[in-house]
Length: 437
Ligand code: GDP
Ligand code: GDP
Image (tube, rainbow, N blue to C red; front, side):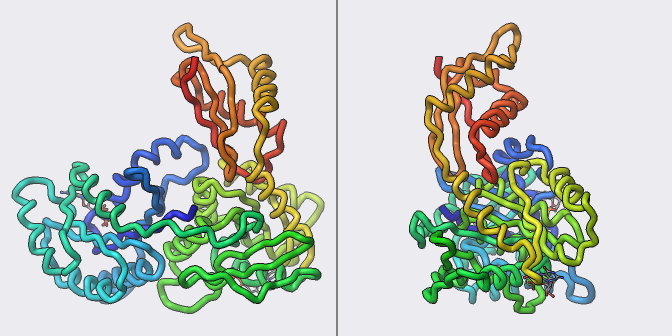
């Protein structure tokens, strides 16, 4: 199911990133113990009252020159208006309503998007009186919050969740593999799309599925149906904000949410940078299947070790994604291109794979026999049984005598044993430990 996207916009220093961190805080504690997931976060997943959404702080877009502040928030607002389902417009009770707040409000007003107006730095009763002037902006009740004290964040979440759109119906049949190509500008995503669609025996359907402004391209090869998600988003349109990282991350987030398989396209000539990790991290957290595509392999100077070394570099940078296969190819010369769709199909199958309970328990018994669970203060964890509860991604619940005795390293060990027995290439696996004695 595709999560809706929430964007926070507002002047610098009103406290956007402080509130953003509050909203994603709880989950972050869980995710952050995974090695290699970057700490410098620009997106997160929020959960409230059983609803889940992704959230991005659009702040920090840097522009030079005069009117810098106004220009950069205008850009944030445009970005949010184009990509977000709900916009949180954040103001500051300490500085009160300013001229630039009003200008941004005018922009947002025209978008017709649901807007939540949050007034931060309401640290005390006296400041609480300051929120009333924000009624003038015309977005309904302003929500007073204090990011630094954590007050009002629940009310803000209530207001956000209330405005989230209903989850959209699945647009494609269950047997269609939905593929998103993500990566920085210029890595060759559009070239790759054209190359795939131009391949022999690829039948492109002329009925393009559409979701709002996203244009998807359905096609069929070797009896398997696929759809390339958001091929429109790969076209460059040349607005200033479209060159910013926030924009490409936001666009990628939405494509990832709608995909089964995420192809993380890397420029083989340039190597890996931090931005590649942000989007790969999102694909991991969203539980999608993934593969790395190292493009432009035609212009890389190679010897017999180049491929191996490049793959090692990927492994070092994406420690949380060791399960993802790597394909080297050239969209331009079509060299090795025919290797790609079989990999996509394979990882999609693994993502949707269901392992029988008795087979799973055989593997776990063997794993326990070789390497017994850890003890803590003299107590040993006992595993009663495990069962796979869902697919996409495969999610396994392990029932034990006391979940507190499960350690991260043992979980890792079990995951490795499960992978060794059942493949699961290209898909994350979720392991949950529950009590049952
Ligand atoms: P951003 O530029 O909008 O992302 O703002 P930041 O989150 O970086 O915060 C800007 C400054 O405001 C920092 O010094 C924060 O510590 C401070 N700040 C954030 N939230 C609050 C708050 O609720 N009350 C007060 N008094 N200060 C806050
Ligand atoms: P996008 O921004 O990720 O969609 O990238 P494009 O598909 O627009 O490609 C960016 C540039 O890289 C264009 O000039 C392409 O011709 C070039 N390019 C794309 N794929 C390859 C490739 O496999 N080899 C080489 N040498 N150039 C490529």
